[in-house]
Image (cartoon, rainbow, N blue to C red; front, side):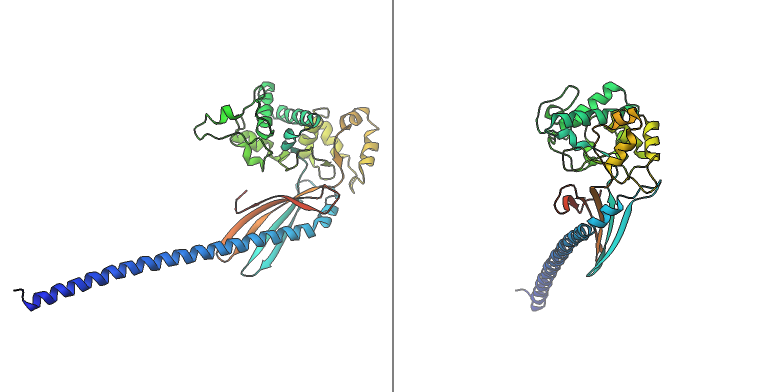
Length: 323
């Protein structure tokens, strides 16, 4: 017969084990509920931040006319044509930087269905690479590679790259075969080294549309000479392009007709600018910023276009991904 004292001790031990087990279970449940609650709060804040980013887009759309007027002013050397807005929201704020897209070569024009546009953009990019000191065979291969990446077909150009190349890499993937969302997409393309991407970044862009951009001649500074040189397929040397940019009236060009009248004084300049898409105002503006809400911060970006005859519109957006 087991003494009563030992039976009581065993019962107490059993009770303590049960209590300990229940305590651990309660702690696990509490932590799980806390994590779920925090996840729900974070999801709610992210959703609120997403709507706040859309509010920033609305503010930019409302400012489109003002930004377009400002884009007619001549660029100043070293000046950043940027407008910063701080918009208060419940529990935080939105910080938004609005800029005119600087004169650049739209790399997505290489995906145009118009063979003339595609050929002209290929020549422009090749001319830019030439000025960067890239040997012509390498430049040809780079242009072909980029064209294969953005065009809709899967037929590989000489010197280019399609699925047969990308699927054999360690982390295999397919060619995009569609316009780029941003210049960051150049990273996996063969030949587009970090150094090359940094070199061409100030003079290139990836606007969602696949046509050439009209170059705002009032937004050009001396650094834009590379864009003008490339867009004219080298017909204007860098020094000639800089002289033309420096010849801009102090108040800016009033119209494309005024530019053409000035160019008509020099047959070489007139020939170089013939057929070049030009304007005296901007048509694309970029927005970038952050939504600060509580302890969280979410980046956003977008591109606003006034290119069409209708109302300004957002043609591309990104939320929650650092640029």
